[in-house]
Image (cartoon, rainbow, N blue to C red; front, top):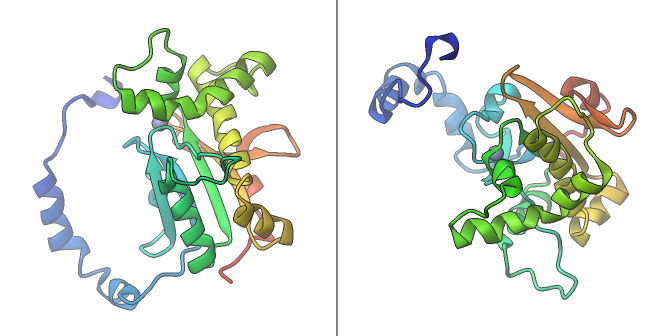
Length: 229
Ligand SMILES: [Zn+2]
């Protein structure tokens, strides 16, 4: 196994982690949590995969109260429906609306990653046995089509990673199908980003419109960054 770690076996228990927090970490964050007790003003909203290897707070060096995060399988964002019915798959839309309208979040990031199980399932010859997962991953079918017809952004990557990079960009486009997002972006009040985490390298990339590919995220998320309103 890489670095001598057997990744299939938990190396510690949940209770050990809780004990360490109580003994070592809780006191360090006492003042910060007390200050946050009555509200939040996050720097950004992140929509990312449920995958345990994605640790947004670590990569963004973010403290409690700084990132408003929605996670789901394969970091998918349902597009607005033409009939205006937002009831299906409404969790993501509801969270984005709350972040922009109530919390005044000005940066929204969709973050995909390498080795995504959801992307592998979307490309597998057999659909997953779970009806729920089949229905959810159908949201990625347009991205599969784009990948097949237009090809990858980076042909050196594995096929599921090629798809993931395209799908992550597509989810940003899906965000803009919602009028409350589109209007804010047009006014310059909100900025949208597609990020992609290379797990093996431990490196965060972001899609660069200028370069037409993913580059180190710090090059894309430069100044002028949108601050909390
Ligand atoms: Zn994933």
